[in-house]
Amino acid sequence: MSDQTKYILCPYCGHTQTHADRCAECGGLFEPLSRRATQIAMGPWYIRDKQNPFRPGCCYDVLKKQIRSGRVKPHTVLRGPTTRQFWSVARHVPGVAHLLGYCHACGAKVSPDDGECGECGVSFESVRERNELGLAYRTNKQAQRAQQLLDMEITGQPPATRATAARDTATEELVDDDEFVVSPTMGQDLLAEVLGGAPATGSRRSDPPPPPEAPAPPAEAEAFDCAPSDEPPPRPRARGRFRRKRMAGLPCLGLRRLR
Image (cartoon, rainbow, N blue to C red; front, side):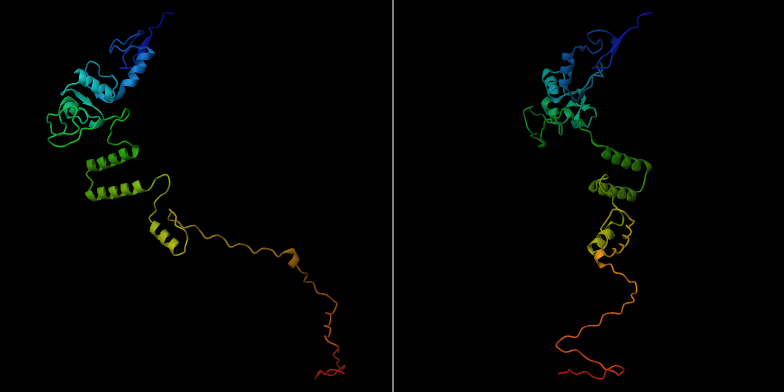
């Protein structure tokens, strides 16, 4: 069996080469300390370099060091958070132009230590984020809504449809999709709740009324026997000292007490 040639991939620029200690394309070392130092210097700022087009971006502090050393000049092409990751000339990039002696808004001459432009009054702010790309649409929902508006503009739909989509988008921002669903009968349900009806829900279909409860069986103490009895009912006993006497066979026309 012949020995297969082993290749190693450069972690900095992606160049493939035979096993070595240094990249033949970008010159980066493959040792762990060099990898750690590169990760510390990484950031969202990219400098256009034809000789090393695949190198990672750098942080804002490294960019300032390159400006002081003269590697980044006013006409250097770069991109970062303040350019929304579009390529631009360094003298027109907010947060970078004033370090090169220019105002990014009006192009006037300024000092790197100035906090604002003396001509137009725009402020010079430093960008300290290390892991922020500065994208225009940061979440998936924002990107989807922007894509829908773009599709409507491309297809040439009327402005009324666009206004309706904008209202729908505003409604979705107020209500979380995972918590509640807005129903067209929401106003009727709320009115029914105020008037004492069924509670408001997020569905068009109202819940059916609960079935009536069955009457409870009588307790054991209240149970009685309804079977007929042959014994005559007992006569009520007279109260007092004297008893009433009735004559047999004659109607009871009147009673009087016997002395």
